[in-house]
Length: 77
Image 1: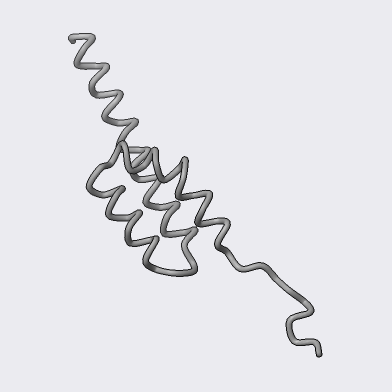
Image 2: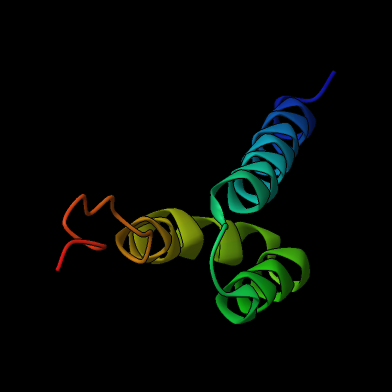
């Protein structure tokens, strides 16, 4: 078998795994607003490699920063 073909198959498989990992992580980590989730989902779906890389570099961090934190003094007067 040709070495170039094997390399192409391996890289395609790695892109597919990265793409699926990004989509699963996006669905699991998004609990707040649905707008950023929809934008990231479209970016990951239509630009699989670039969208996945950008999500893990930028989006994942921002999605975690926007999560609510527990504040025990919220209801105290």
